[in-house]
Length: 169
Image (cartoon, rainbow, N blue to C red):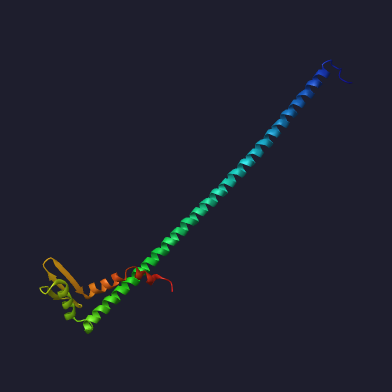
């Protein structure tokens, strides 16, 4: 036996169809919204990753630049230290050479005293200096013709020519 037909069956069927259609429409909109949200999120993620890559590259370039500057500073410091060492050796050799010249008589203490008197006058008090050479004094003036001072003056007279020591051959 079949159930008696109710006059509201067509209304119920239409309400059920309309509810399913509304549910399908809501579901379609939800899927579309989810797809759009995912698309936007992927775009945002790609922009963030691109920016992060750019920032990472910039940081890498900056770090590399800092490292190049540090390396250049270190190299310059080593070069200056080497130059100072060479100059100190040169100064020591020049001093030793002047002392040896004074000791060997190539330049006599008498000649140094004569030069001092010529510069300060005949009344200059002459004093021999250990290591060679002399100092001379008159009131208000002092003249140092010691071996170390003469060597220092010789190096000073070289002036900027001393830079030629650092030129590449």
